[in-house]
Length: 100
Figure (spheres, rainbow, N blue to C red):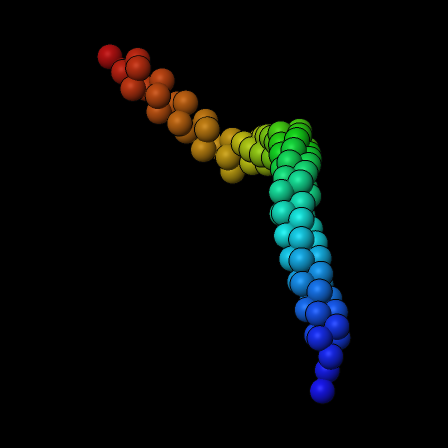
């Protein structure tokens, strides 16, 4: 059988461990969930938004505009397209100035 002193020491140790674990877990989780996540989210969102927007607005738009203009110009300057454009312009001229 345990003595009164041993029971009291076990109770004190149990209380101390419970208090320490509760305090540490509460403090650490609060710290991690607030400061760390706030910092990470702020940093990640700021970095991602600035980097992605910068990247999208410069490289992607430049590439797309270059590609589209190159494609359109090459398509419009091909012989088949030239004939089509000539037919269109002739048709518009005939429509605008009908024969007498």
